[in-house]
Image (cartoon, rainbow, N blue to C red; front, side, top):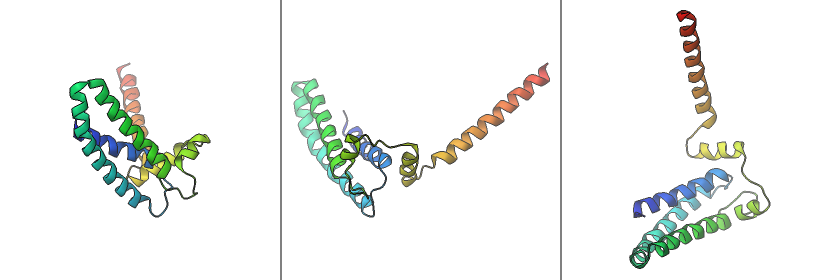
Length: 140
């Protein structure tokens, strides 16, 4: 696994947690930046060890990388700040999974307005269907 893909995986995992549980409070963005930096540096240092382990056994190198990402996910679930004071891990244990509205709010933090984009997509689809129906009527 290339180092750039590992760092992209770190960013993707952080984005997934922050999208699914967006109520991080006033220090959430600072936590995101600090955590991304810490885990990226950790993955860079781990990459050297993983290359050495992969030299002897490819499966062991893969296991080391998967263990690092599992550790990162657990650390994020335990330490990510939430406004209600309940950790993400406790929410997951209690079965409080994110719903669509929560994910929409989380995506808006990253500049993605899902509802607006879906409406535009549906509107474009409706226009194309109307064109196809009109063309079929004309061909009769």
